[in-house]
Image (tube, rainbow, N blue to C red):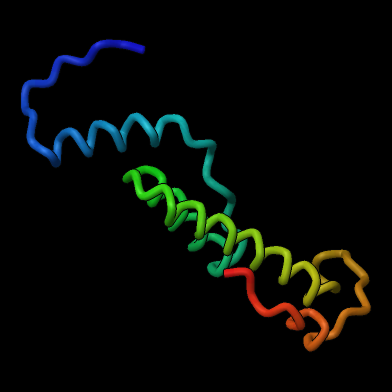
Length: 96
C-alpha cells in the first residue's frame, strides 16, 4: 500500500484513479472465443473496474451459466457427449 498525492480531488479523477488501480489487478483478458461469451466477460470486468460489484457478480454468474449451456447443447464442438434434450435442460429455467 502506498500513499498517493492527489492534486485534483474531483469525483471523476478519483474514480479514474481507482479504476486504473483495479484494472491492474485483473487477470489477462480472454482470447476471442465468441461474442456471446466475450461480451459478458467484458461487462463483468468493466462493472468490477468501476465499482458496480453486484452487476459484476450477476454478469459472472450469467457467463458461467451461458458457458455451461453451450457446453451441454453443442457437444460436437465441445467434446462432450450428453443425452439431454433442450426440454430437459430448460426444465429448471434460467438461474438469472
